[in-house]
Image (cartoon, one colour):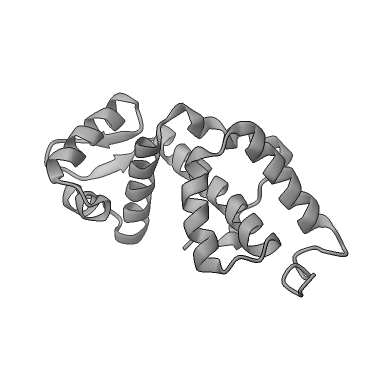
Length: 157
């Protein structure tokens, strides 16, 4: 689950949020899994990635070769997988995209947190730059409003 409290999306960071449009959904999902595994277990292994993706180790190896060619990971055969600076940056962007979408769905539209999180996982990979910029502006406007800001969002407005 994403900790919403430590994500601050500013107008200056909005363009960075669209960088993930350079990578397909599968690449993005692998980066997220590696990021999460390293965050939770300090290492990412092929077998753990395969288990989380529900695919074979062979499929993971093929995907990792692609990620390495894209400059997103470092991986030696039979070794741990780590994100490069570019991979970590993509992971941060995906976290931010997820967070702003989650805040919109949960805090503004009032969806249950689990449902909002599930929908945010889908939308973070497919939302285009124009829609994302508009969503960031919307969330920022609502959160900054003294009448309907964060302290009032879930008060049945």
